[in-house]
Image 1 (cartoon, one colour):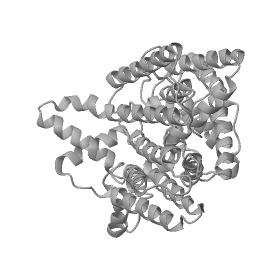
Image 2 (cartoon, one colour; image 1 turned 180 degrees about the vertical axis):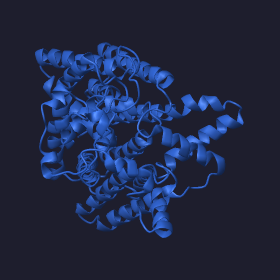
Image 3 (tube, helix red, strand yellow; image 1 turned 135 degrees about the vertical axis):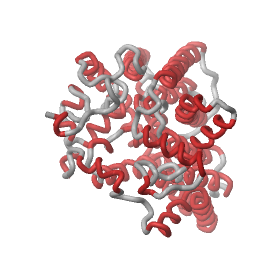
Length: 458
């Protein structure tokens, strides 16, 4: 990514972009008002943690409940909102206010994508709108913008760290020297905040440290690079690392595993994994996109694709519906275009990164590689269908928006192709809107999530 002189967006671009943003906002606000507050991934347990913190502000024993072993930042913010509304005598508003925290974090990520792409490609204002739109109409993004869950806050803080690092490389790097300590501290603090929200924030910390360490490749910059790495790690430790050190001192581990509260999950299918689970992508990925379909149950990347671009765990849509299955097939086939664009754009970015480690691609490529590797290891160690979720990769929102928009823009330079691509993306957006507007075109499911017990699966 190399910045050039800016150019204003045309009236047509502004109109399409404005309509897309308005539609995405309407879907999110509708969902915030009608989506049951205790639905969603671990939502009921998260509410209990938030309420418990609001009572005494003491970190509980990790084994006290399902969510109490998690890092506390999201729950503390939720508890502060809850306690504040309670003090004002409007406690019932917390049911809407706390889910809106995730909505706000998600919108902030889309705004960061817009700002970064606008800075990287000022000559192409339409691409910035496209980058934001790709996130605003990403089903995993829409879903997590509604739920009482820490995922969107973690994704937001990770995106802040990546944004600071990438933008610095676009604007503040001297041709012959590394960046300053201020951006390193900001990136480290944001990454530490992500770490204090979810363990996956370690990707943000590692990305920030490695990006600053790469400054040492510049002649005479080793000492300054060492200082930047130290600042990143110090800021991350002060912001989020203390929680893991505390857990190590008090409980003997940095991150809990196998707590009694989670025993119910240990009986979930498939229960074990082999290397083929990371290779197979069955036809059911497109033809029957729900995570308990027997062949999809074994496919990590097929399941990840389904839960990124559709409601594979059925928290928004009913299970037994032929119309929902057909919508899933259409959505997932249409989503091949931005997914392929991301893959190709990422490969181009990795090539530029190898040629110029000082470029803005480095933090984007590093974050993607580290996140995918960590996710693969996590799903290997936790061989249950519920952990295969595209929502767990929302920390890659910024790389996805940057690289997918870059490649789609490249494809659309010819008018005929641009019309085809635009129509394709409009159809995808329509399918996403239909599948993510809760209790809209489709009736709400009878209960949240798939029934996975042996009796239910017969």
